[in-house]
Image (cartoon, one colour):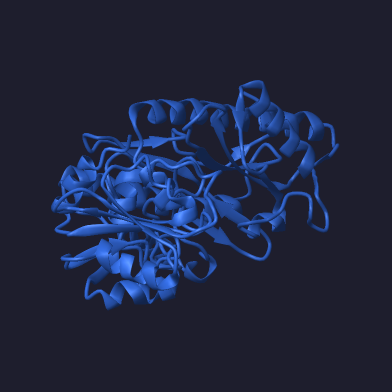
Amino acid sequence: MFDPEPIRQALREFALDGWLLYDFRNSNVLARRVLGLDEEHAGSRRWACCLRADGPPRKLVHRIEAGALDAIPGQSRVYLAWQEFEAGLAWLLEGLDTVATEYAPRASNPYVSRIDAGTIELVGESGCNIISSGDLVQRFEATWDEAQAAMHREAEAITTSAFSVAWQAIAEATSAGGQVQETAIQQVIMDHYRAHDATTYHPPIVARNAHSGNPHYETGTGDDTAIRQDDLVLIDQWCKVDRPQSVYSDLTRMGYVGTEVPERYAEVFAVVAAARDAAIECVRGAFAEDRLLQGWEVDQACRDVIIEAGYGDAYIHRTGHSIGQEVHGNGANMDNLETHEQRRVMRNTCFSIEPGIYLPEFGIRSEVNVFVDGDGAVHVTGGPCQEAIVPILATD
């Protein structure tokens, strides 16, 4: 049975009167997860649940799916006609002033916005002050327990070791002047996952030369996909152990098929690494001082380094994303480019830090994951951080 007491405590902490959770045909996966509902059997009618700071939850369900929220304690009202739905929604919110829901003002955060504009209009007609539930979602959906943190460390060991396997496969194929397809190295990594009981929603990115200048390059789709000597190679990979509630590790590293990395590549990598480290230090500094940190601040600390080095126009994505049961999770992103991320960076959450510089001839990215534990200690996983491009053909 769902326990509403932790949410009541959070509502009081955030000075909120209620949290309206609403779903129609699995349109709001965040609401379903918070309530512990099965995402595979979402039903075909609208339901709403208001978790209230002043008492038990109130629930609104359709007559032909009257049991949809039976796992949630509290008062229920059943509707059939649309007029009854509207009246029921008003009843859910009765007596409340400030209510959170999966909404973002001015479309400022699409990762949170899960409720359609018409429903928001109905909520507004109740007289409530509506705010985004972004930080509540983080607290109850994006935070990890100890078991998930342990599974992340397992996944990190698999992704980290996969780089060594991939570099070795490239070295063996190219050391005598041969070549190997990007897709072949992608398959080497996928085989490594299977051998270690790991899974992923999508194969990794293996990108040579100019392909690495496309942050979301689809491996094997470029004009020339054969990796040879003197090629730059970007590998971006993500996996999780194949167990319930497991969470991802998501890492990117760079290699060069040769014994000595060209100065131009090394120069750009140094800028990216400095930006990455500035973002990490931003997080560490904030938690050491026990001060509130918002996602946009981490992005800006990183971005400033790249702008100062003259590559601002070549940094074309956010600094990082939340990591959870999906590789792109539902917590705060490190973003002041695509959105102005005002959700706080919370304890027991994980996110990527992955700055990149993308030029026509090549791209450089360095990605690590950062986990902030319950005591506020900041852990960089996928480390030690890559400090230089790997010379794949160099001998020990």
